[in-house]
Amino acid sequence: MQKHLRKKLFPKDFTPEIGIILGSGMGQSFSGLKIIAQIPYAAIPGFVVPTTPGHPGKLLLGTLAEKKVAIFLGRIHYYEGFPMEKVVQTVKLAGDLGIKTLILTAAVGAINKSYRMGQLVVIKDHINAMGTNPLIGMRSLVDGDQFVDMTDCYSKQLQKIALKIARGLRMRIASGVYCAVSGPSYETKSEIRAYQVLGADVMGMSMVPEVIAARFLGLEVLGLALVTNMCAGISKEKCSHEEVLKTGKQFQIPLTQIIEQIVRSI
Ligand code: HPA
Image (cartoon, rainbow, N blue to C red):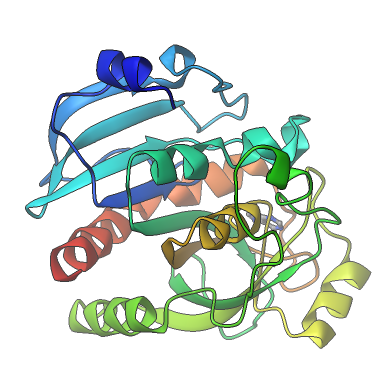
């Protein structure tokens, strides 16, 4: 971002260290957050505004657990029809703001039968089944190596911290593999059986492009998923966005609690 725009939009001398991108239905209920500025996505040059219900499209700057943070309320999904460049707009801005650590949250459907609705999953790896990649053409936008190594793209240290904190808070948590699809339709039962064979524990329509872009920019990443539904054929219930939003809202307090403690220990 150009210097004069940065000066105009962001508070002086405010350099956030940690970025947090919140997923579907996960509002802003961080009890310890002291907000310094609120910036609607519409005011940020080059940004598009999310069209999905449950994604307000607002950037909060402030302090959480004595750390300077940037909290992105709402993300762009590939299924909205925007190019990948816009899907990763928050990550690009996080990099521009000098953020070093990115915490990504997402609502997911569970494939792993031992998982329960409302529980957390620390993402240990992913399968990109979106059929595209945000680094296609990225070289023309940002200098850098497009051929990014994705071994251990989710920080092992941050995973350890998250698991320890969740256990300390007596939260149900697992460590699992996230499989990203484009959506917006949910998967068929046969697709779920196929992704199960491939090694997926949870399914989602976000997170992965952001992780790829973050690793391209050299950011450390933690992926935290909230199980909002069981995938097709795993339970008899049908999948719906209303259910995803409802469960996201219902369990956002434990999620924000754990994030607050993670931020404290980074
Ligand atoms: N499938 C894909 N993405 C999702 C799901 C699901 O079941 N739930 C929330 N995001």
